[in-house]
Figure 1 (cartoon, one colour):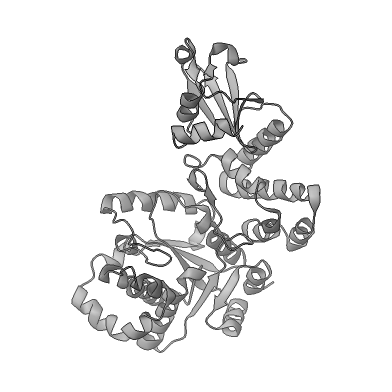
Figure 2: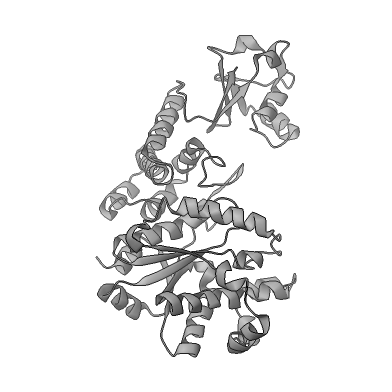
Length: 407
């Protein structure tokens, strides 16, 4: 099946610059394409994962990805989808984040035998001569047209800095640079990158008289249109140090029924026949599809052994058991409980609550259990006798579990 048909069937494709031409191109030759990732944090998050999966599908179909890490563009910051200007990062932080991204992306894309390329746009953006850049590149961009793009329009009322206004020119220049150096003809990205991608396509046409192409993907949203990947602790990260494999698994295990089929199609490699079958399950049966989704996504991101551990731990907790390994755990010194520790302090130490006031709210609303027993006393004291085999299970709400172990 043509790579375009695969992406279309699985629900990736949102917009294209030249639908028929892109499909024909992917059908007749090995295409070099690129996707950019700005290293604004030290880990990719689940919002990036849709484009990572699309890149993987493209590579499996025989095409060559260029993974572009935005060491240069991150110095400016993309205004797209932001109500305020991004926080400025130092070169040292960006360099650290770049190295983290490289390590993570290497898990999903094969770079053996030149099957993929990883580049950093800082290599050509950071040493540009500003006047030369304006004369060669800036002359081809209409300010009037740029202001019609949604990424700029929504910021005009609150204020758009000239720094951010340059971002579209820089990303467009990336496409031009990759076209010149690697014959890269296609840029892919999230649908929020549409205007930036159009800028690159237009720049290649103006300077080389050649047709290049752009294609955007659906953003990962719920059936209600809200962005997925937000948890009580913040973003759902791909780094196991920032989001544990167990928490990662639990997120997908607990998504809304209406989002299961979409996530199975976008975030796993399961055949669409199986995706459609699982997506049609209803009532209690849909839980089988959620377990499959959680296992498959966790396996891709964290490996099969971690997926098995998370799956086993989740099922054991559901049945009232306790299996170690994948459940988030805090180790505390036995001496801290010799005279008792109040429940609010314990919730703080395990980071199950962002504040003491939130802890009080949960307790008064019957949202906290210790080894299955509800705790309703705000002054409840936890001591060594509460620990069975040096272990105590805290449950927050219906779905969040955390183990405390004595050492």
